[in-house]
Image (cartoon, rainbow, N blue to C red; front, top):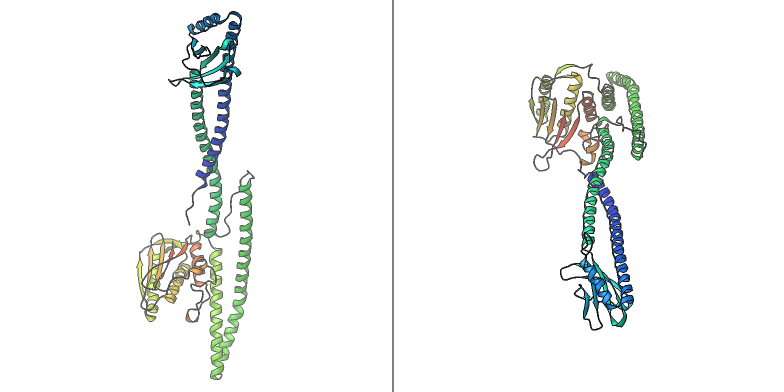
Length: 449
C-alpha cells in the first residue's frame, strides 16, 4: 500500500493559519485605533495649550507670551510628555522656547504635524501665526506614547503566537479525531480483503457525514455479501444436484464399453468418460471449498495434528511424480509441528500447491516445500511466474495462474481457491510472491501463514 501523508498536520496548520490571520487583522485594528486615539488626545492637549498662549498674547502682548512659555518650561512633568515651544519673528529669530528648529509647516493655516529631533525624539506639534509677523509653535514629545504602543505591539505579537499555537493544538486534536474515524473506515476496506464482505464499519451516535459514509459502506458490503452468498449457494446447489446424475451416466458408459463396441465408438465413449470424470472432479472441488468455507473459524472441532509428519508423507508420495516429469522436489520440513487441524484438508492444501507447482514448473527446475513452526508453509517453483493481470484474483474460484493457459495445463481453476478456503478454515492466510530465478524463469512462491 502506498504511504500517504496524514491530514492531521495539514488541517491543524490551516486552522492555525486562519485563526492567526484573523487575530492579526483584529490586533492590527485595535493597535491602530489605540494609536489614533492616543495621538488625538495629545493633539487636543497641544491645541488647548496653544489657545491659552494665543489668548494671553492677545491680551498682554509679547512679554506675557514669553513669561507663559518660560513658566511652562520650568515645570517638569512627571510621567508626561516633554513640552516644546518656539516663538520667532518674521526673520526667524527665536524670541522664546526650547525647540531648536522650525518645521516645514504653514502657520497661517495653523498646520499640525510631527517632526523628528536629532536624537530621534518625535514631537507632535501645531503652529499658528500671531500679530506683527510672530509665529508660535506648541508641541509635545511622543516618547512615552511610542513606548506604550511598542509594549502593546509586543503584547499583541505574543498573544498572536500563543493563539496560533493553541489553534494548531486544537486543530491537530480535531484532525486526529477525524483521522481516527477515517482510519477506521480504511481499516474496514483492508479487512474486506482478509475477512471478505462480512467486515463492517462502526457507526457512531454523532450522525455526521462520517457516519453517513460508514452507513453507505455497510450497505454496499451488505449487497456484496448477499450477491456472493447467492452465487455460492447456486454453485453449491448445482454441484450437489449434478454429482449423482454424472455418476449414473459414468456407470452406464462403463457398462456400455463392457459390451464390446467397435473401436471408434469405444474411443468416443472413453473420451466422454474422461470428460465426465473431469467434471466430477470440479464438482468435488466445489463441494470441498463450500465445506471448508462453512467450517471457517470452527477451531474447537479440530484435533491436534503433526503438520511436519503429514508434509513428510506427502513428499514421499510426490517425489516419484516429480522425477517422472523432470523436476526435483526439495523438502525443508521441521518436525514435529503440532497444530489444531484437519489432516485430510491440510494434506489437500499442500497437495494442491505441489500440483500447481508441478504444472507450471520448468523441466530441470526445482520445487521447494518448506514447512516451519508457526505454522508456515511455503511452496516455490522456478516456472514463468504468475501473470500480473490475474494476480489479484488468483485465489478466486475458476481463476488460473495464466489467463491463456490451455492444453495439458488446462484446469478448472479451483485448486488455489480450495487452498485459500482450507487455509482460512484453519485461521491462516495465503499469498503469492514473485521470485527471480534466471532469465525468463521468474518463479512463484506461495506462502501459507
